[in-house]
Figure (tube, rainbow, N blue to C red):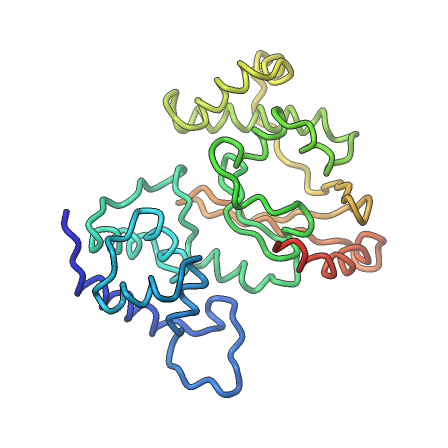
Length: 280
């Protein structure tokens, strides 16, 4: 497949012009005159330089990589069909759809963008963090940048003992069983050659605890609505976790709240003071 620079540039401009700042979680300034988003705003949302993005829109940029295209698709809040079209215009085959995709649906992103004063995150069926609100990073740490199997909280749970420090020790035994049960169910859906199956093989090789639980063949465990965190600066927090599911992508939007007037509610208020530091 060859890149169609003119069509790619036109498509990017059209999608940028169709978005408003509030559509992507940005604040509209009083003096704003631009219709749609500015190029530098799309570049920032896509985690790339403004010059690189501007050259793509002018039709004289370099051949974008699949990683760059995925970032642009997410920054522009493209639908799955629009994302696939973007890849084809740039001369790349579209990514695989379904449970192995990291592309977050526009609707899910719009909801997350409106939760900036709430701990929230979007995760995959393997517990891989794709996007977090500032308070989400302040609560559970910034994990969206991790790569490979380390992206999965369940994988880190068995390979990195410090992962468990954020959770009440009384919950550890159940959480271990929960992760193994969930991984077994994902493998049943995705098959013996899936990423989930490779993860299970690796964990059986490196974690005796995982192997012992795996041999129980336990399935059907579900997360408890109330989560008990042990924050390194705020101490114990008792939070309710509500989830919204995107069945097409197998993504979960997790939102953490506290009972009004409780000690945990006051700690969530204090958490906002830690949020800026979580971006570093």
